[in-house]
Image (cartoon, rainbow, N blue to C red; front, side, top):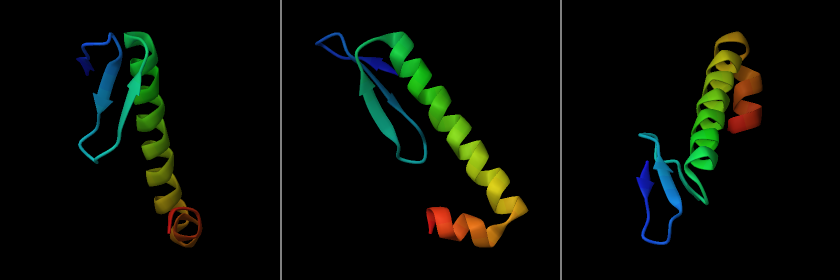
Amino acid sequence: MEVNDDGTVSIWCYCGWNETRPTMDAADAAGRAHMEEFEESERLYRENPAAWVERYG
């Protein structure tokens, strides 16, 4: 995370995802949601690769 000059907060992931939010809490929540989505994607891939391809293709 990085606090920008305008007071917003940017957050990045090693996968290339990034977002800028108005507060540190909002950026943290966005990062946590991103990680949860990734974990859900991984679970779906393990359980049903065909469904994963259909959704994330």
